[in-house]
Amino acid sequence: MKKGYIIFTALFVVGIMVMTGGSAMAAAGFWTNAGTKTVIIGGNTASMTSAATVTSPTFNVGDAETLSSGDYFTITLTGGAVFNGTPVVAVVNNASGTAINLLSGGTAGSTTAKFRVGTGTTIATPGGIQFVTTGTAISSLLNVTALAHGSNVDFLATLENSAGGALISGKSLYSTNTATGYPFVGQSLLTVTNTYKEDSADVSAASGPYTKFEGNLTTGTATVLTFLSPVAGETTSYPIAGLAKNKLLITLTGDFTGITKVAGGSSTMGITGSDSAGSITGGLSGQFLINAAKTAAYAVNTDALVGQGTTAIGINPQFTIDGTTAQTERSFTAKIENLVDSSNYNANTWLSPGTNYKILRNGVYFSANSLGTYNTVKISDINGKIPATGAIVYISAWDAAGTKLADAAGAVAIVLQANQTITLTGDAIAARFVGTPMKYEFAVQDTSAVVTNVKKTPEGFGSNVYKAGGGGGI
Image (cartoon, rainbow, N blue to C red; front, side):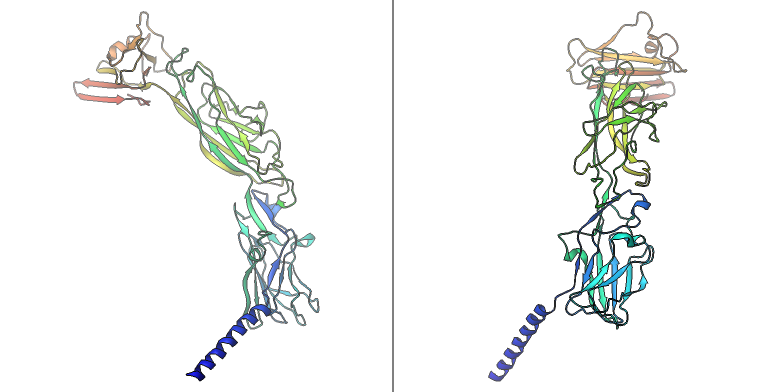
């Protein structure tokens, strides 16, 4: 028992010496690199095909990683970077100064390049292998055009002996240099936030139902489009340029009938009205340019986007209606993109069309295109909160050609009282107009009315019901 105990103790002590001694004596290989470069997504291929790091990174071999003739060194690119041609690699701090030779990879589109140490060459500590990514020698080295927003490009080093045995496997540049960051990071040219707003056209507007917003206003609430762009003009970005003026295109789409203008400039960025191609001919400063078809409005940046960085840029579309056109319920979308900007940026979309503004209607409303002898329309107040003056029921009509019809002489205003039900026959409704009505629009100054259109014919019976937030057709 005592002898066995002595043997076990001796082995344990030896084991401890081996572990601690090995750890202290064999320093592991590591990368050195001086910093990170930002790759701005959307950059033109010509401006980003050949990208250089801030300083050429070097993999410094460890004590137990000496490379001799026939040994291998492999560089692997991650995060979306690829080689764009024959990579440049040099041997530093070694006895002979003979460069190592490319064995495979390193071709356009590849992510790895494998090298073999040449005859008579030894790479030992202190020393390493330099990945030459600075200066004129990188004209065909790296392609970072495929990076996505948030991409982190890393360099991985693998060292093998001549028999293929691993000395170091996939050693990350970032893991040994977290303070300086990744060699390349992807950053969107624009990061956009779209906050939509809405306004209600007022059934009680003095100029006619839904011709103005609530409060007798013709100008709506400004919507919000905010975005950030990378700092431009500094030396650690690709491309080293800001987006030029008239190259940021903001598009609003929807039905602009009855809308006189859309303002949009802000304290952080001016806009100029333009067409869909960015031409500012006919455009006004601080306003979107509404197209002739009244289906879209466009604007571009008045000044170049330079040095924005972390300062939020604001665009604030604000719709103004003419005060005479009955506004229908509808929504408008916003889209933000950049046009081709010389050799710096490709065309790209940063905000896909999304709802930016809505025009709503208060009260209860509906339309009809089939009202006749067999129809009866019943309108009821259901919450009893109508004021003593009552709620007006507005009816407008158009003929088959789309001409709005005038009211017939002597047509009496229709007023709904609290909890009251009004019954109108199809013939009586038609008689309120001069001409032959084909389409009707009804609007009730009541937020809680219910409307029923009953149609009873010799062949059968049917009905439709409309409540607040209507807009259906009969």
